[in-house]
Amino acid sequence: MTRLLLARHGQSVSNAVRRFQGVQDVPLSEIGVRQAEALGAALGRRRLAAIYTSPLQRARRTAEIVAAGLGVAVVSVEALRELSLGEWEGRTVEEIQALPGDPYARWVRDPVAGLPPGGEPLPDVQARVVGALEAIVAAHPNGAEVLVVCHGGVISAFLAHCLGLSLSAIWRVTLSNGSLTEVAPPRVLSVNDTAHLDGLDAPGAAALSP
Image (cartoon, rainbow, N blue to C red; front, top):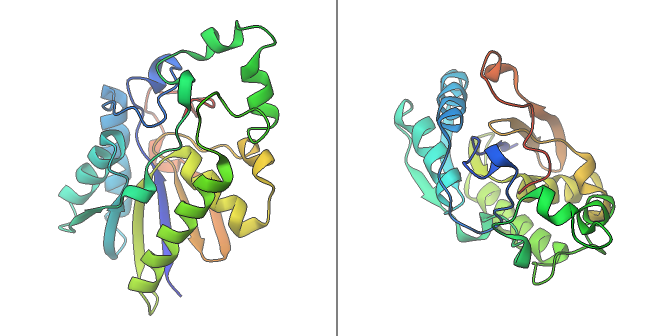
């Protein structure tokens, strides 16, 4: 059975200041680069058949750093991009919390009903992500291990699909920058493994700022 190793990208410069990025293309922070290097070192013991990545540079750069030590090509897949957060992109968590009615709190409680203005509906996100990952699994049968470097929203939507969770509950799952989640579809084997990040100077998760 194919095993998907789902890695959230290293910390971005926007994650570092709790700024919503969504589909904005922002680079890794210095800590994010170190997280990617640590992820690569941890994966050096695995025999990866392939590495796929979101086209956004924070994910792509993470994948490239990992691949550099493994000799595996990186393939970009458009459908693995992060969910769009519409009008919130480029604004900080604190700025959204200060808006009338605290729409950030509503979004955390129920990201389906509390969708940011102009944001991508979560059912649409889940559909494209599930389709992309199912195609990757189909391309690598016979027990292959495949690394997919993408985003917190992307991994959360796929986990909801595998576990039968409501999309309204996906922010209950913590996915730290640089973390590793293992799935042998539809079985979820582990979530948010960060053991390889011990000692790095970064928070455990860039709290809900995709």
